[in-house]
Length: 445
Image (cartoon, rainbow, N blue to C red; front, side, top):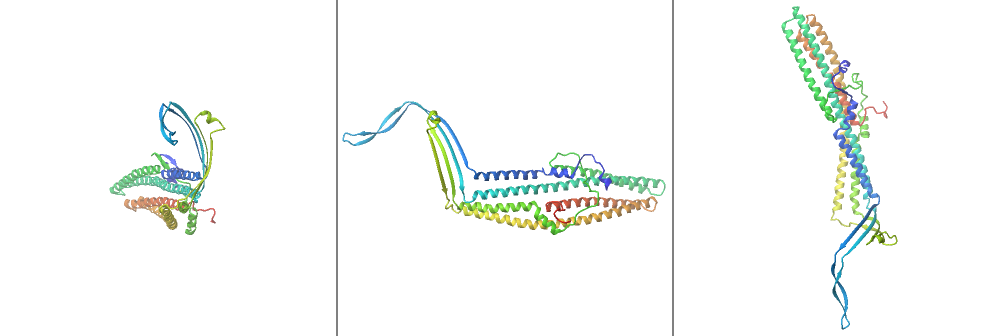
């Protein structure tokens, strides 16, 4: 196995850690990261109502008017002593008049039925949910990247096994030719050995195509351009498989404590409960306070005169929507439905998580047993091939028996490689479910 791992293939070496880091910038992970940024902006917007709203306005204008005739109402004393009013034309020459204005208003929300602080708490909960979703998505991206990394590594190791099979087939062909020349084998044995060598070479060519496909699949997932890369086996990959004792109850407890998905659902449920309170706030009045300062003058001289043209206003306002045509009730009911849905989803997610942990634990245990059996099968198949090769060299066996033994050894070697990769993928899947490594430093070992 060590010799197979050390086979150098053309391409840039990449490690599992490098691939996992790159997977965090996968498109889905980037979208989750952008969702966190949006949630942070929503929280800032919700916080804005706590502070006073200050508006400043400054305006300067000039009105140019030409000669005009207007009608003015003027009193007129009648001969009998009564007073009447008549319309008289008044000619006004052209004029120019300026307007200078300055305004400063401050509005402060005092009470809105609890809407603003519930909205602030809700956006905080949704921000926490977005952060948890980011961690969850990054873990999912890393898991898929891990699976594709090991698929590439498996393809590379399979190529090494197949190349070794080509070398063995070549040796068997030379041996068959030697036995045929010595009169101890038939021409058919030589032809069979040549066919076997050709088939093994075909398998090598196809496996190289499989490596190219695995490279493209891995690089596509991490958002990199296609190139020739080589998956470098992690430290300890060639050693005996070491997995801590799997206790389902402990793993389920850790998953409930650490899994980001559950934290996301809890934050979303909290946000839904606060949405109900926000909707109910419309049943209560809204109180605001305001203050304003303004000055207006028809000329710049008056506008800059500090002793004139000042106006200051202070006030408070209460508004209360006493009846909204049952719209508020509908909003409350809609928010309660969403809250109930998220709470049910949270409970169902917990049940599904426990079931997934159980299945993943059983799958990892099964893969460990299969890998152990495949190791034994490989040892037996190699011993059988070695014995059959010796018997063939001594003239006590046939080329067909040797080929069958070689095929069994090749199949056992490929099976062992596959089961070794399956163990690592199953382990990574279980680690994602429980939210971290299988060994918890807080738990006794």
